[in-house]
Length: 274
Image (cartoon, rainbow, N blue to C red; front, side, top):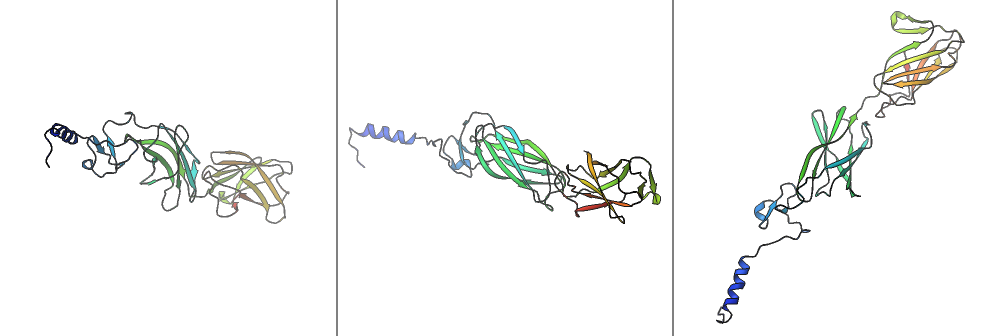
């Protein structure tokens, strides 16, 4: 192309300007990438976000986990754990929450967020028998902000997985004239109508309040109700205002027993050998 002699200096300046042009990505525009070579000059491809980030962008401070709240501390099979995570700044991705148990790990599912200030995210995790294992589970959170700075392995709480219904380990009378019989396999108690009677049941684990104990006669057609007086560390104490009829034999039946995860015994009432 012939350029008039008077315009040649201007054409040369424009050409040099074009050669010196540097691409800039608007702050709000996300440029996807799979390698830094695909990003404009001065940008790098973040390996987790898979987008081009400008060198030196951000405030230089990694995000922080401010608080976390769990919907429950003990969970049985089929129950949903809800987790609320509050962080110090907006994130490029929802919090990555890992449930760590003995010999396995799994991911919680983001359900909502961010909301409020500071930003809060909601996640959920469903406990399933066969997938989860009984015992203590830890929650670990990884965070990544808009500038690609990361905070990895932040503890967010613990909960206990429990699939096993509670069972009585021992039963004992606490009161006057208690005596062993049948070689120690069973325990009997001779009482007068004015005696107060108490029964202590030691469970295999801690249980929720609300357990009840009934003394049902096997031949006299009578029944006595024991009121719970104490529930500490899996030890249940019951007291009866009226021990029952003189000369009657009673079978103790425990009902309404739930462990801290909500597991119930297989039958509505458990017959106790006492």
